[in-house]
Image (cartoon, rainbow, N blue to C red; front, side, top):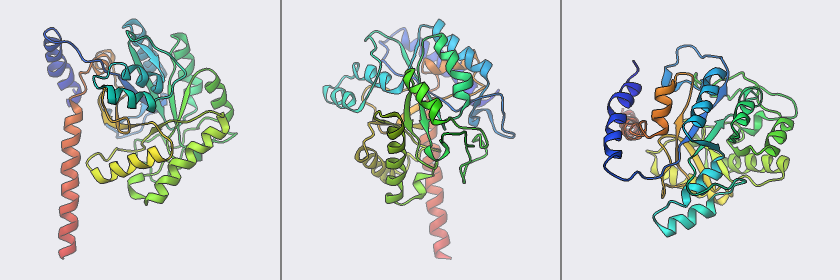
Length: 321
């Protein structure tokens, strides 16, 4: 059994049940992170890093959301709902200003924000009809260099092995149909670039141009952004600069690969998500929704800090040679 599943189901979730019976539970927004909805599997990729979810498994996930009383919404709608539970009037006001939604949710709703990265066409062919069955919506993040009037293949130059390179992306015609049906579209840079390796001017260009392209085609504001690749949260200076550039170019929130559910008062420019793929069976899927997977955020931070220190020491040692 994989370690993250073992800890989540046998240690964290039982402890949370005990604590939940003794204390009030803080309102949180689960933000699900999907990529491709297909039967395609990338060889030699561990369950944690897989980015493909089979249509059968995705359909089961949506069924579980419905039967458990959750409602699948866009990211902006979910954040607006979350802002109503903020304990601080200042952060409450700020988050409301940052969100933009075409949906209105009751305060006592039980929303889950469903997000998709990379703009794959199988969202249109496999996922959307399933969500419509339950009256769910979602937010799709587009790397605009791979979006055209005819299908283009997703082929980032520096993509890791777990990225589904070679899959077709949505066309602008399909995107317009989905937009009119209530799907929210956000930006995912132009070229699916590794932003931390770029100069500030290049990062701003990736942010600004992807946003502009989507707004020109949909004639609607784009306020949401998804950070491509692993989010470098240990690089505090970079994260601070990125946040400033996101605000400067008109974004109100940014979702990342940080694990965890969004809570009132969280920085809207570095929101955590829950990674989803075909390996998320019923038990693990429900545990993630209920907070049983949030423990992994701390492990992530420690690992990233350790990697950062190792890189700095290695660079320093090489400089002295």
